[in-house]
Image 1 (cartoon, rainbow, N blue to C red):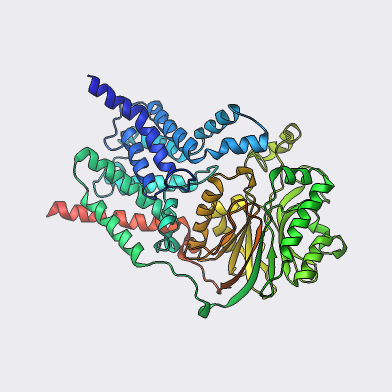
Image 2 (image 1 turned 120 degrees about the vertical axis):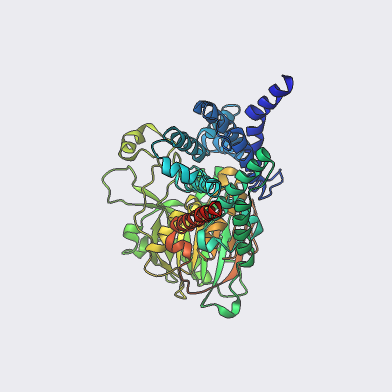
Length: 542
């Protein structure tokens, strides 16, 4: 009785907590070991605790949801321990309230598992009404492939605050990610979930499934036999000498400047200017500053017609370097009648004459930081909420060009985490960009794991779309990520320095993932299930 009780307690409490911690440890951590296989073990424990293999229908849905929430709580506090730090920095909320708020994120940190449970419950509840479909999906040859795919679908499509998926830790084995340009990061989530189901099934039945093992072996073989390669200097179509300026502006100074302090503004601008105009061995083509580097409002709507309102600092940096300037800042539409959503988080591109060439307004805003997800109701809430910026949402996918005619695009901070957004961006420009700039400000997170996690997730965009990613940050980590997932020299966290790099790029063609997105893996898994089903029928007839 005691032994049974201990096993029950392990399954009910300790195992989901352990599973959540293992899941988190697949992502970069400053104090804990991170291994790409650990999240698969974590998901295996979750599947075991949810009784999905045998699926005891007498177990209540609420009981399973509690298990998922314990998993999410452990995942949240282990992997996102920096959330309380950010709440303290951004909202000036101290311990223990900041930690309680941080723990509450576990309710929304991994919603895909809740949706999976709801779908599975409905599936079994109405199995008699969909008997042919139920029988097909219950076939031993396709059962776990189907469940792994459904989890991958929910993971990809259900909105998440910080989308860290099961497949993302595989970035640690780059450049051996040959399936990524075909199916994106989701293929590695699918492989991971399929592995997890089979680990759990083997634990129950003491025997591994040959069909799933064959599928996994073939996928992994193809993946490792097709390593990604980096563009060589001999095969480039464009080259641009870039200067990445990491001024390492602290939050106190940044907030003071944005609040109107002339001393803070002067200090920030002087730091950017000094780093920008340092001597270089090569002629710089493009100087790049990070997200919201310029602390005052700019007016792109009038700046194109009136060069006199371009800040003198920009012109001075351009004159002394002889280069173009690409900078993050705040834009304002003074033509709007209302103050609501009048400002934009933006990137600005200035030519060698100090004239504004083009601008991009951020389109994917951070919920509860840059806006609220309540649609038209937001304008009524805005006067009551002081700590949210209520930025306007951009409408145009801007294609920039360097002075060497190299086309490129820009994504701001949070936007780089969403492959669907970057895919839409790349597919909406008039020409294929040769590289992508991601301007970011991770200063709110301090010297925690967040900058490292943000970088690791951003690397997937370079791989999925075969495009170099220039990651320019305020406080680190600044570097260039190449299309095979490898990285250039970097400027680490809390470093004040510039980084000069010659970027060699090519005239890109669309990857399979850019063309078809999630449809590619859907067609692949569908075809796989049909083949396995007919092989199963043929086997039973023999």
